[in-house]
Amino acid sequence: MRPGARNLITDVAGLRVGQARDTRAKTGVSVLVGEAPFVAGVHVMGGAPGTRETELLAPDRLVQEVDALVLSGGSAFGLDAASGVADGLRAMGRGFEVGSLRVPIVPGAILFDLLNGGDKDWDDNPYKRLGNSALIAAAEAFDLGSAGAGFGATTADLKGGLGSASVVLESAITVGALVAVNAVGSAVMGGGPEFWAAPFEIYNEFGGLGGGQQEPAAVPRTKLTGQATTIAIVATDAALTQAQATRLAVAAHDGIARALVPSHTPFDGDLVFAAATGARALGDAELDPLLLGHAASCCLARAIARGVYHATAADNDPLPSWQARFGGV
Image (cartoon, rainbow, N blue to C red; front, side):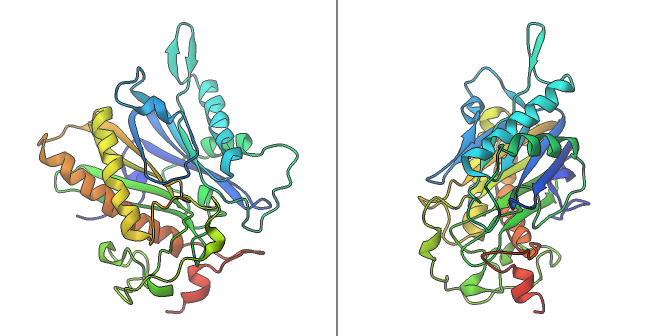
């Protein structure tokens, strides 16, 4: 397997990512949007999720495709980001057709970044505006690290961030991942600098440090009050049903467990969306879904490490970035 041309989720043709941030509040939004509606599924393994319209993604529901997926900071306030995206899509004439109206289908998930040193004393919830700005900015190229939904993210011992990665399978099917890393756990082994995701790294994409000490560092109790959550999207150009997309999201959770220790805790709201554009038919109806799940989990592990690796320092940060602490390694 090799990365796609950008090593981003947008290596899945027809998908774009838009991002917006509020530097004063230290928060942001990331939006995945397609040239056309796409099949989507979801799976939650964390104990403290915050979501919008995820029930719509069950395989037995009426609507089988979505217009966009949203990852946002802001805890419950951040759920309003999807409203800004929906407004923008409606203005573009997009959405599920209901009579003479169109209703954009925009599921979303949030992470908790309210105690990260940013000024949250706003008069008006900024997330609807951020969601709309992120949609307008959607493009094939986008920033990693302190960007989008990962702008104010943290982990147990380092700043978190926004990560992405991709891989092209022998079948020519592409798989990509997008993740906002804001975990109770740590992305690095024993305090670092080596990443738990090191066995899955391709082309030194997060430092090429290899393995190191295997003993996890102690989890700081200061993050055990709902202040976490890693939220992600895995995407493919394969033609999947909504049930198959849901299984892809389930498999991708292994990537979180490989890259963050501990993961899926009662205090995280860990969630994975899966998106499938349907451009490529499956060659083997039994084997290809297995390979896609494996690729998605490896891709997500790499994306998590890349998000932490590319984070940058800012004023009033409660934790150092990986680059600030280990950049000279």
